[in-house]
Amino acid sequence: MSGIFGIVSKKNCASELLYGTDYHSHMGTEYGGMAVLGERFHRSIHDISKSQFKSKFYEDYKEMAGNLGIGVISDRDAQPLIIGSKFGTFAIVSAGLVDNTKELAEELLEQGETFGEMSSGGVNSVELIAKLINQGKALIDGIERLYDRITGSASILLMKEDGIYAVRDRLGRMPLVVGERDGDYVIATETCSFLNLGYRIIKYLEPGEIVRIGKYGLEEQLSGKASNQICSFLWIYTGYPASSYEGINVELVRERSGRFLAKNDDVKADLVAGVPDSGVGHAVGYAMQSGIPFRRPLVKYTPGYGRSYTPPSQEIRDLVAKMKLIAVKDIIAGNRIVLCEDSIVRGTQLKNYTLKKLWESGAQEVHVRPACPPLMFPCKFALSTRSIDELAARRAIRELEGRDTEDIGDYLDDRSEKYRKMVDWIAKELDVTTLRYQRIDDMVEAIGLPREKLCLHCWIGDKGNS
Image 1 (cartoon, rainbow, N blue to C red):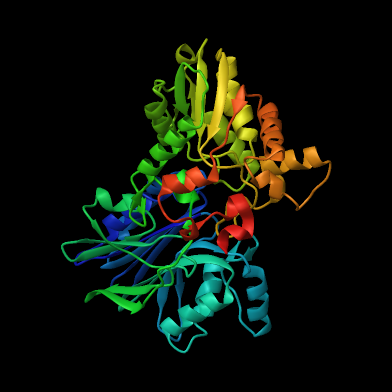
Image 2: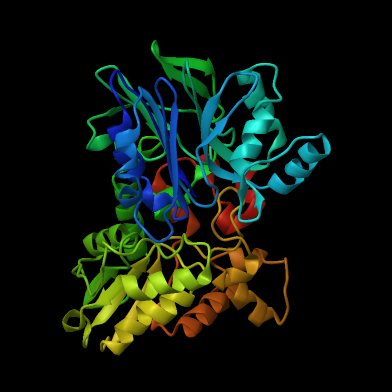
């Protein structure tokens, strides 16, 4: 995923843009970027794959001046881009995944278009979005036409002289939220970016909604729709604990999730722990429900290492997974541990780096409790897991069936014998005492939105988005 942040201020916004964008650092690991519009556009983009956002931009922002600004933490494409168009010059950032980028780019190239921004040897999807918008009769028409063409999702901030246009994707997969403070406005993916800057939430954009924030404040350009299917994984893993989506706080969802895990469990243990950081809230809820004490046998060395799930290369993911967690042997030795994890994706990092540290430190038992069901399908709406072959559950099914198969209906039913065998196979591969996943109905209830308003594609495929 990526995270985006915009600000419209009565004074120079560069400093608050820096910190507001930085509060999205957990959303991506490849590029960071900021653009400010004053008398002219100021822009800076850096590779942040091996360094923190603030360290790259701390000097840059001092050279920026203007009342409008947009920033991004990007999982793949270098952005923001400054685009000259028939609608005037604008800066643009986007969060999401345009799944048909290659096909649309080839179509535009055949029409005589050129692409100046190349990312990882391919077309920069943000430039593609800008070119598709520019095909409209007017700016809003161009944005509407964009969503007629793309598959996947894209939430957008587009900054020009008359303000910042904020667009939540039609599917509602990615959030956008508006905050206000004394007539200044911010709009962001993550509401945690508002709190220390003193902004209060005033509006959650609806799917497909377009607003402009400028000298007249917040103005609706196109109304949205009430129906949506927001990414469930935001609450389970991706989002920051202090953030809220659709008015529902992340940390509270994780606590409720942990309570459900405990309600459905009868394991005897000495302590409950969460894999830092995103497993901690789930573990707190488990401990509150079960009465088993919460302790920290694994601590994260936060200053140096980010998330092991988001980097694109397996080599970097493995390095981060190995180095970021430090075992506290005096808490681990001789104890039976319930280990809450946000999810099991590939399973290799959990086995090779997390569980290995517990066993080597003398754990007596390790009972793993993921906060969501087995992941079965790659995400179509964000750049995360891109291949079925990567998923631990699919490896289990392949081994149990003796072949690749698309007939996995029985494995989606947590009451079936095939589901039980799949979980047992994963438990054996991970080398854990027991493994028990969250039930999908309990995950939905923990989030607190109706099932039809949640994207559940990762767990049940396209029928979760119908």
